Length: 590
Image (cartoon, rainbow, N blue to C red):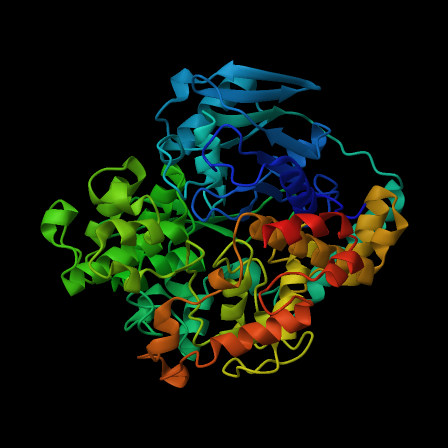
């Protein structure tokens, strides 16, 4: 009851079962797929699924979230979790049907992309099949390989890499529901309330139309659109990438199981170098990584990059961050055409970026180095390349500049997964959301509690498992969410918002303790040097912004968390959260 489901189950099992110091790519690492109590129930936007493991990219705890129908199918099959351990001698896949679990030979799937893999397995196992699989990047252990279900990715942290290290190509579920509920009539009434809340939300009319595309305009307007490897805050000519330009290419909308938001957009490029390329997406992050990071405004290139990342099974943010890193090294002369295999990594050259992406996925040439992530790549390249590696704890930075959004930036620094924007997204800064209160995005004092609130709220929603676009942006009011959890499980305390928010705090602290046990601490809660030494340029209202007191921000945060000056949860805090049993673990680790 303390961990509820989804993300809670993931960290509880990982902490209890994984021996400290385990190599993330060894057979001993665990790969945990978990669904939440609301998956498959018809609750809107609540059927996502969580993958938990020790990350091969960061070495930390990691949680990645996927969409489409796979979470609902887990529940239809009667599963809250799938725990994968060990490894296969040859490429295999796991087949689940009617309580039966079978490891099947997947040798004929070797090298197939994610679309080919899912099409092949659906042909074999029938139309009631849903699949989570890796592409060639996962097979070749690119450290930020993703897991795809349909065209939705559990993208970050290398969960597809862990899956590849186990020679597991796919998990296939054949099921047909439904999920049994203690009180179906009551739950149906709560879903009707949820539908009404969606329709009444001030952002609901626009979001289904454009998804995250409007962020391109919004984030450029405030000067936080990372450009040229986080040197500048706006991209000249960004108007070519505005929502209205993508909508000219829209073929249709898509959604995950039982969701009325329909945020997925399928685009087909109409003209130019990439005419005919179709992709579900890109979303905001991918647009930035394959435009501003390489100084390009070619809209077709962003669609083509998204399609290629999905087919190859690679995280768009980490891949784009690695490529943006390489472009700056090329500009500085640290990399030359001898190092790049003839590629001219000059700003604006989008064709070179797409070719470098292919080489990363196949571990060819410079791609072999960049496939390790920017932290490891910088060490291998040398020549002060580490000064240009934009990451936190080894995870490449998302598309919000921390000098413009300072408390969102503090979330990156203190996140248990590294620089992940979804785990504690700061609507208060990016969109001036007033809940729980307005935030000054340039201040360096007084808002550490907002970072904590956002992180705990994210963990609370991740037990559902609720999509960030539904939950954290308040289309699903927290009291209603709690009522739905209580009704779906028959556990009355789940209906109390403070109980659930404390569960989120408990989950976040256990994740922190996992990392402490692995040797992480305050020394790892740091911004890349650029954000504390180089003022933001070409950034409109954020021109000249710099993080001046990172240590002070961190100390404020540790205080509101109830942690000590080294970022360690105190025995008092652990006892307050019902985690007293791990106090000795943490004492020994430090």
